[in-house]
Image (cartoon, rainbow, N blue to C red):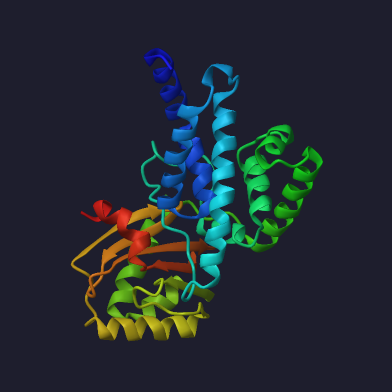
Length: 293
């Protein structure tokens, strides 16, 4: 390959990269795995007969999709033995120039976990990335009609499992800060005003950090948990913390007293906090360390 063609190929990949990452992250739910997939896709693209490829972006999406499907086979096996609750790796989305063009909410990613790999791919390619069924057929090695059925089946599952659209994260910053301060100081009166009656708290430690093994449901139980954690921590805020936006949700990054980098995202409903996602697994928050510095 000449240097000029190699540069053209690199430019084509870089142009498609944001879209490819968006697809890989939604498919796999992890930032690190998505980055690894893109590196592999780039190597395969370099080895491809690029001069014969009429649609580089479509070709790259097919490569990425197939690599993700292979990765999902082992990922699903790992998650079956995952200690405690599994949450997707938090994705920083506070920079408008870097925000992905479609929903990356935790609720959507958790709903996708209930789909088969082929259902997930068909749904994402068609409903999120507007690919036609002929292109999806080429990516999945299934007939267009089979891909249409996969996407329809996945759509029904997602609509059943996924809650309504999240609130504007920029409008939730004040509420997020108020919750963080109240939870760290054990201010149950303030927490009662901030939390929905049916609030849910899901915590992911991955067996590497202390976390609740099962979701906590209901206002009373979440209040007791917050009070207990505040008491153990001396009712003080961490020395290092900041408001941010994760997966399109108002969120807080903090360095906790035990040294863990914690990411907490809040899902709002009718002006109150309906879901609290706490990621404490250090393997899932390592890439956020610079955002706290």
